[in-house]
Image (cartoon, rainbow, N blue to C red):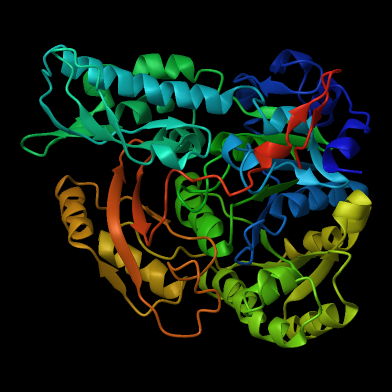
Length: 553
């Protein structure tokens, strides 16, 4: 059966019953049908004295184009912890429509380990990303309206971009204002995908509605002729944007196919944004469960680094254990084996590609000082010989490995890793960040590039150097950094899979995100508006006469 058929043939509990499992009463949720709900703001005060549970972060090896199953493993672990009698809560990101209709498909797990209702979650869900898109584009409309009626703020340069939650490379460069009306000023513009919008980051990093408004007001939307920043609050736009986001900042409650309570909220990409679910969702989950399983996007060099250096720094939290997800196919892919042959047994490719996994382990264990376990997302094509070789090599490094078979067996296939994690979270850690906020911007970038990516040095374009100088002159140099680069390599070259030769990281531009409270560093040829593949997943998605959706995977 397909994922969607497995999900559809599983009887779900009503969302009020899922809520009660973690101490949330019916009055504290706002139901969106029978199986999904928003968690109301009132719950935060009711649970604030609860002791925090243990936080388990799921990250991964550098992925292949289709990903390595972090969400599948996260769901497996949460269900596995429930199987062994632990009070576990899952905290995940929301899927973006871009990948759903693009190359990766849905983002709700697979096989017997899924969050549900999967069609709803993968499509419009509770409308959070639509609300973010609307707030983003309202701000754009207010900017251009202000310029139309005289430009009292003196915009010389508008930097705020419109967005939409679909992959559309045609929108990477556009011209707006071509109607020919006398007061409209045409200009070159760009679209981002909605999950790359600063408003997505703000929703994920805001503590409450007042904090949300403050952050929205601090968005830099352009510069005047003196190159002084113009903020969203100068347009008095933050209140209206907050109104559009009043429900979007509330976390969503759903369930796994095995009825594990799951909080799904926020969805920034990790290669172009900070790649973690919301602060509100994670903090709430920690008050509701004894074990909280969450994930960070793409490989550990991207999502996990940002989770630790941005999210943990802002919240004071830290993971009690980190799970690094690997697949035999990804290891061989990064050992130079061609995509169409990575499912075949290849010991040489395995032994070459394991260096990628080693580097992620060393970064999390030795650089960040955290407890680590490797989870193999098991495929039926995996050879026992390859798995044994990998297990032996990891044991030599003192790293535990668990073969996770959640896709085929559900939580039962994750009991081994659940038991190992219960013991692992008891161990002491020596957590440390990769840089200090007092470091200047270039020092921060160099520390991440050399310590985490393994680069020799960092090169800068003239434009990047000018932007860094400007940001520091404005007094924002002490913000954390969010490096946007390819997910396929430690380097900034997506074709450099093995990273055997020495390399530098090239920073081509730097963008201040004063509202979100970080600085985006654009490395390599990363795009903030993805394109569709030659054969997009959208071609297979359809709806039948009886209203059943097909083709989402």
